[in-house]
View 1: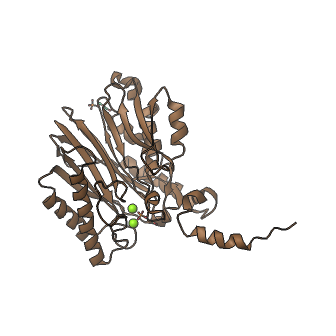
View 2: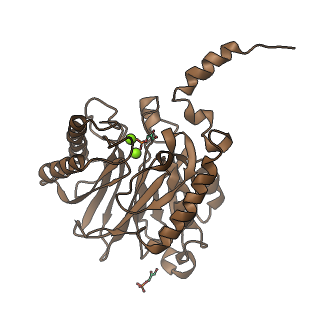
View 3: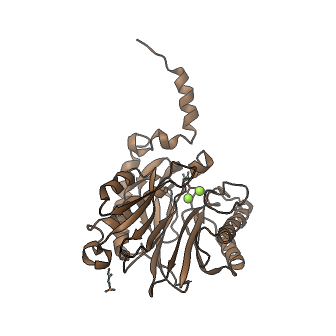
Length: 366
Ligand code: 13P
Ligand code: 13P
Ligand code: MG
Ligand code: MG
């Protein structure tokens, strides 16, 4: 059966700052989707990561379907009403447009979708991150799909020996989607040269070269490119099909052990290590550290199993301790150097006015 897997996610309000949505908000979105998705959706799951709530769903309408996107938009509007009533912080934060216009992309919420013919067994992982931007997935997905040091299947499985095609988007260009397709392993250095700059070049999707089938989809929204000012971090979601012609689940997870430094953290303006956390993780230290959660599922005829929490394992407790050490280390240098993002990333915030004022006070002296 050909199905579409969609995840639509937004920050529509949270308790006590940018921490976690309230139970009433989660219930409202759940009930809304249950009621309004009953004619279109095959199945759905609601979850949250930090202050972001996600609707994961299956249907037969293809990607970018207006009906599906409108239903999600309306669910986020309904959730926002509850957030307002409860006085939640940042009610409706990610809903950047006044009315729905055909596609939720470019309106604030993050979207990742894939349409595919189901394999006889169809495992996939749904990743959701908070307090970071979409480039956070560049390194782990590069390593998980291109590097035999992390993905043993590239050596051991004949189904993967042709490698993968990466579609990479230049998120700085906002008129249209500006995309390049590069093949691993042939163009590995070109892929690395782009993914290095994770604020600008972001993995949008990945395909198996032996079958042409899609392996991964990442949400690529940069909120500041839509709003023209800082309105919260993008907090990206991703869907990754695993096993068979794709990397094994554990190969996709392996690079998350690094806890690499990503942009985000406090006020979306710092670098911090990417911490793999359990489902429904909240946010704490310095509005972070940036977190990623992973829910693994199988799907059959569009019906989803219950999720398996991929980072709920003693190994990841050890990783979280190490990542915490890394977070402390970089936080001890406050605003200095690479601890805070460069001006080009901060220019959507208040620092612009401050520097303009100071510029006038500079004097040219001999
Ligand atoms: P099983 O033999 O348990 O299916 O595992 C194979 C595999 O892909 C491990 O990564
Ligand atoms: P969110 O993007 O998760 O709302 O976080 C915004 C922020 O400024 C945290 O300090
Ligand atoms: Mg928020
Ligand atoms: Mg968030």
